Amino acid sequence: MPAIKQLTADLLFVLQIVLALISGSSQFIRLLTTSQGVNVSWLASWLTFLVINLELTLRAHRSRPSRVTLQTVLTYGAWTSVIAANLALLLWRGTETWDGKDTVTAVMVGLGLLLILLYARIRRLGLTDPLVNAGFGMCFIGLPQVTLAYKIFTVGGAGLAGGMLLAGHIGITTRLGQLWFAIREAGWDRNRLGAALSELANEVTWLLVTVAWLVG
Image 1 (tube, rainbow, N blue to C red):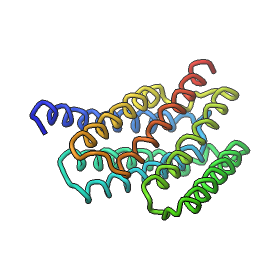
Image 2: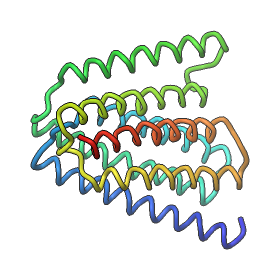
Image 3: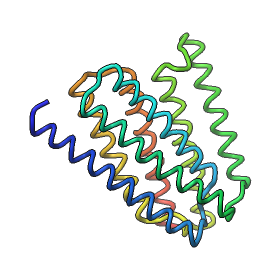
Image 4: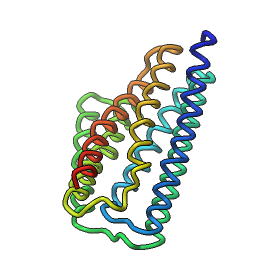
């Protein structure tokens, strides 16, 4: 990779780590005082989404290791850690219990997963196929954020930190940038395509959450 592109990739990686820390810490601090509007199922689903994409990027790195693909793995590792910490805090404090919206989220995700499994069966794809995993990721990130947006719109979103919202948008965009650099360097493969598709679903639904937070 040319020096200027490598420098850009390195800057994106550093930015991702900083964003993960800003997003995770701001939300952690907010949850210490209020969790209004925050769904248990949302954080749990987000964590699952990150674990899926972490696995996809790990596979991509193993198939063709490079500095850029390693940075992508570390990026997802950082985000996975901070979201896990926030979910642990929410469960430990017990201020947000499982409610009707969590049940709706679980049902929606379950139906989405069934559709993905049906698609995989029809196309004769294994459960470890990257595009099947991408479909799982889209279910775990997109559908819960639609429910989250509705909950924030109806009850308020004081429990969601503005820093997390902003860092989320910048983080998704730069993760897509990292994937683009990885694709430019190593070419398209199903792992990178799967990660990109799930991140696009992440951004679209995160925009819905942002609109609800601003209006609510």
